[in-house]
View 1 (cartoon, one colour):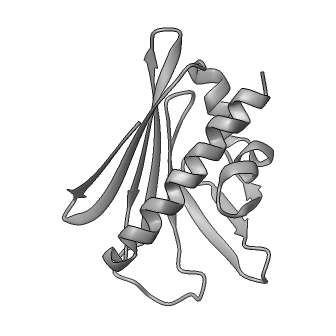
View 2: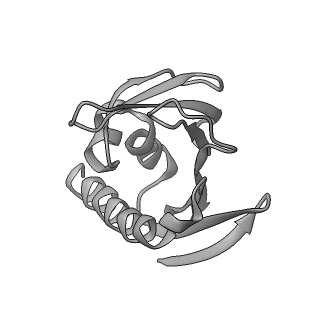
Length: 144
């Protein structure tokens, strides 16, 4: 497992790499199926249209719905989306999340990238994503 802070397209980004013992197809299901994604992602997924241009809706459980637009959907390799501000405020950029799966022996390498709209959130986001990715790994283990 490694984490790096970098600049992508002039914006601050966190990038996490996880070496998983599970194949891309199994991990793909865990990161794109709303039922599975809801188990490790910070918010419950209430809608996911599995295609580039599709919409995702997340419920934070406290009355706020976050929306996202899928920018890349290339099974079982690349899933990326832009998260929009839940208050509808105009921001210069949306948060961009990218999950890339690469074959690696019998398993795969998961590369999770978060390009941030607000760089002041980097430290808290880093810890939060570490926890989420730990939970993803745990879910993959219990799924057999």
